[in-house]
Image (tube, rainbow, N blue to C red):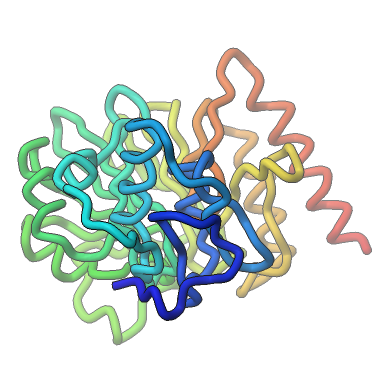
Length: 292
């Protein structure tokens, strides 16, 4: 729970505030950009919400915050904000909210499909969120992009009797038994509309998931940056190998998609052929870094 005693001085005066436990995951700024802004390496309230729309967005950010760093001086009815998750992104893909501190606030997603729903990476455990996901058909597969954004994967898998999928190169004993370990660098079909694409770089076993040749769940491999106005992959977070990550980026040329939904960073929707030049520009920048 956020603490008024730790309220950051940069917060605008009023009801909502961010305290000093903020880890700068950026989710509050994505969910409620009219209310929250970056201040140094943390977030703060730039303007108190005035409309009901902005108030509800700020409350959804509060629900999502992985460190419970967002608070209010007055009591609010949280039911609508909690019930908003999973929140639609496309007609069949939903943002789960309820981010986990252990995943540094990574975004997680639910794909709703007749053949069985897919949870992409793990939110923090919440029985309230679980009930909402149950109403959408539960979870058949829990796809883990890599070893970092797994949060409460065991509890989610057990609750829904879901099959967890992880690349063997990111498995360790701390995971215990994983139902399906994929291997190698070649794409692996999980179903007709689900393709696992190994993308080593950020970690040795990092993978992305392509859904319906339309939506690419990129974990920590690739994301959109508003500041740079482009797709970004960064050598500063290539924990395994930057040269391997560049090769993994180049591999994405073989696939079609118009959505990028990352674990960290901003989402991107670029239909009608607009994704390809953005990807090529990102690859060119990454290759240039590799030559310096």
